[in-house]
Every structure is written in C-alpha cells, then in structure tokens.
Image (tube, helix red, strand yellow):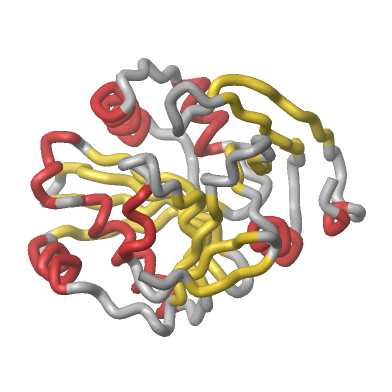
Length: 234
C-alpha cells in the first residue's frame, strides 16, 4: 500500500487477476485499494506514482512481462496545439461548457449509457455509472458540453494542488463529427492554465490500443517508466 495513505481512513487493498481490457489475449494483474476519503496532496502523490482512480478505488497495473500501460501527463504551460487540434477547437466555438460538482442526474447518465453502447458495446446501469464516476474520495467535477440546449459531452475531472486528472469523457455519438474527445482535452488544458496547474494527467498511454494511443498527440508530454517521469520524444 502507498505509504502516503498512512494517515487516511478505511483503506483496503487487494490484487485481482483477469483478462486484459486493453490488449487481446493478454492476462492482467491489478493492484488496487479502496478509500472513501483522501487528501488532495496525497492523491497527487498517488497519481504521480502511476495509479488511476475508478470511484473509490485507486489501481495500478502490475501485469508480468508487459508494461505497455504507461502513465502519461501533459506539460500544461509547454503545450501548443497542433494544426488539426486548432481546427477542431475553432469548429466547436459554439459549444458552451458548464462546470459543476459530480452528482447523479438522468440526463448525464443517459448520455453515458448511449456512449458506452456505441463505443464499447456495453449496457451500463445507474449503479455502474454511479460507482465509476459519481462516487469519489475527492472533489470531482463534471464539465458538461452543450451545443445549444443539447448535451453533447461530459468530462469528469479531479482537481489536485498542482494538476488535474482527466478521469473519463463520454459524448453523444451523433456529434462524432465534431471530434468532441479532442475538444474536451483542449478545454481541460485551457482550464489547467486558468487554474495555474502544471500537469494534466491522461491515465494510461497504450501504443498498441487505438483507443488509448492518441494521448501522445498532446505535446510536450511525459511518461512514467521505472518510477521516473521523462519526456516522450517522437
């Protein structure tokens, strides 16, 4: 268990084994711990050591002979959008954004459910959704994206002392042509600058998974290997 959690309460840790959700025909070994409340500075140490959060659970992949799930973060002050990213940003200038504390509401759940059916062929329940994205040991925000009065996307973010963690993003498939995922990350980077954060954590960069390989397109960025953050070169 991470030593930074020594002063936290209700911590339970465990190992789980199963099929890898990212790479075909691979087995996964995940170390996780459950905590109902964590201090922001402690969370930042945890995420900087390679963990991710799912509800009240923090987890880290410990799969033997693999190491392809690599934590990645974007240098906020150094970031400069590419030509295609700037084009997508301009394309969505009519979108309005509402920030609010994470809480359950039917509109958000229905969008999430629609997205999961489209993107992952999953049927999600209210309980699944709440456990994953609403339950949190820290202050989590929802960034709601609207085209007119239509909710087209939602991003869930954790606000930390020196960084922001991008937990998840879901969008209405009918608005795929807007590249809402790219736009949401650009807006999260913009928010990081406004709040004077140093890093935007994007979770795992997986070069061999097309749904996870895009994260190195936000540069400059760093990856965590052998316990050390280093800049990812082209």
